[in-house]
Length: 111
Length: 423
Image (cartoon, rainbow over all chains, first blue to last red; front, side, top):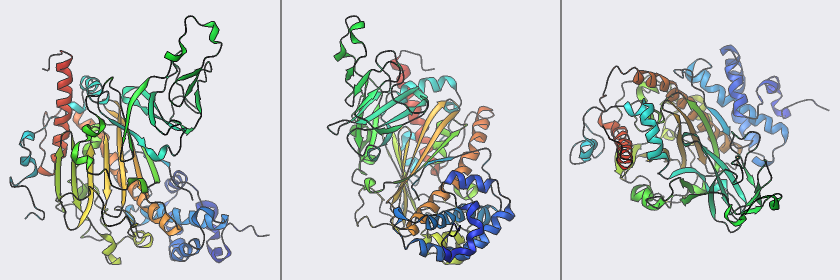
């Protein structure tokens, strides 16, 4: 019995799954806001080089009927996109010039 | 040098001479008295979008929608014959809010054969008729057939469900929407059923936020990062030019050309854009909707990007060249607060790659919308300072000018009808 959260082909990403395999945008947003830039950069640097392979792997399944480990891999990719704005655009977790504004995502498709 | 054909008058604003070109007052956005009138003059008389037909997939489907500005909850249902109906979400017996889950302050949705009041158990059919009164014999002269739910005028257009709170609407929905908005009737909105919904409570008048989304003059200075990571893309002094503007009654629209980032070389893209093949203008690999898209790009520009339809009073429909659309709705809650709802609609993803492209578009929407929201309370506070009585608006801000003029006209007409002096 393996305790692995991700498909074995992505064992190298296993350390990130507990933190960043998050099912919903509100969870991913909160995680980004509570992370340091060093943490966000480390996750981004680990995920990005593996992202194309991970997308190809997930594309091997029907979207509405994915095995749990593949779904967690897809959640990691969602988190990569969430983190990319902090790393690539703003250079900080928060949106530049957003003041005290808050926008909640209240409905989204799964997975 | 203009990049797009302009009207003979040379500017869009002067093409509509009724608008004038002088400075404009925003007193309508900071006055509690004006807000009280606006609520009656506009929100209790116009057709208001409360949802889409996809939210009522079968007979018996229902949802409730809060209209906080007018302190009403509307119950929208599809009855046993498939007709869409709207009612005040209030029990006829003692006035309890009828349908809710968790808290009567929240919205809810689901499927039902009947609606049952949680308070004393009165029941209503999907057509609003009262079907059961608990211990009916205890009442006096009760005429059950007269005790149905209070109906609200309701009609649909292109899959959008509208209600009108007036006792007798002065125009049908179709008359109200007019030819310009009506031209979108055949657009395949109904194919875009994958929905991402956002909600924000903002500290500004509802019109102040609408103004931010009906001109693109603000985009280069405020959204400096949006076009890409290179210095030439991040030019706050870039000179935007709208391709086409049109006004039809209380409604208005603007067309912009597209960035077509799907054709850009990788060095001009953010890495996540290249990875997801998506961004602020949507997924690059657009779903095939056929060659003919009714109503879009009305002026026929060659690099069409977005049509931005502002449906009076508080609905915005943004149609993108990559075959998806966004709706914004703005619900006033006081003279200087409102609830903002943004809904992104995509043709449903079939693969993980397509889902990630939709997700990146949805992530991007929130990042830049937060910048728009972030400036709002600053604008509201600045206006409330009353340092200036009027403000200059340029030709790109023609829709802002038209909007405030229209709101003023509706409120003035209402004042006259009530016999209240206008000045």
